[in-house]
Amino acid sequence: MTAIKICGITREQDALAAAHAGVNAIGLVFYPPSPRYVTPARAAELMRVLPPFVTSVGLFVNATAQEVTQTLAVARVDLLQFHGDETPAFCRQVSNMNGVPYMKALRVRAGVDLLQYAHDFHDAKALLLDAYVVGMHGGTGATFDWALIPQNLPLPVVLSGGLTPKNVTPAVRAVKPWAVDVSSGVESQKGIKDAAKIAAFVTGVRNADV
Image 1 (cartoon, rainbow, N blue to C red):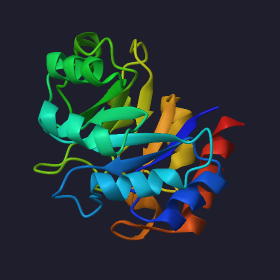
Image 2: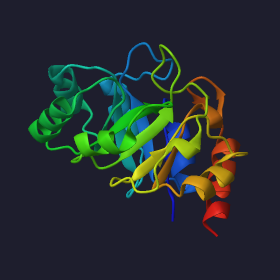
Image 3: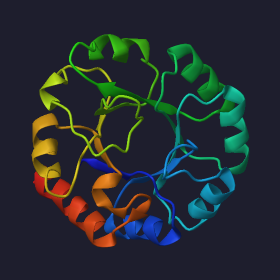
Image 4: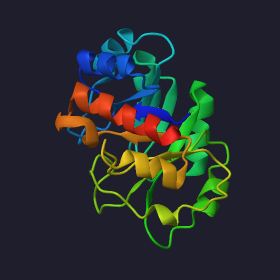
């Protein structure tokens, strides 16, 4: 069954709506320029309302190792998501130093060698594949050409980038990812999730799994 992550959670009611809809993970954005940014203290509050078996994921963009460690001291997420230009060595070091696994995001465009990328980040739990938009690190609402994803990637794929309740069924059927990740596609405004859209998104994923 395809796993589901709702990213950019900023409110308790949105975290609970995601959990009650049956999602597997929520994403907390520790990137200050993002409209979905939360402080570590706020993230800790949001994590406290989560029921069991819902994974918390912390998203970082070109943070320093010290910044990640300081964040984890306050909000110890279950999984790190590196969404910037982090090197394999950096991701490995920070993950090992803090005892928290990581996944690496990649903004996909023609010419990017995904097989080489998977080789370089071989110890990541997954590759999160997002749309490439100049100057933006996720949450863009843009899709990319799913045909660019090789069938034989050696890491689990988390499909992101412009997913909505309307297009997630064909996306899952086309890519067959381990998981899907949505942020803007289930929002009423930036950082504010819509419970009905979350429920519809989950239904769309489950319809694809049939």
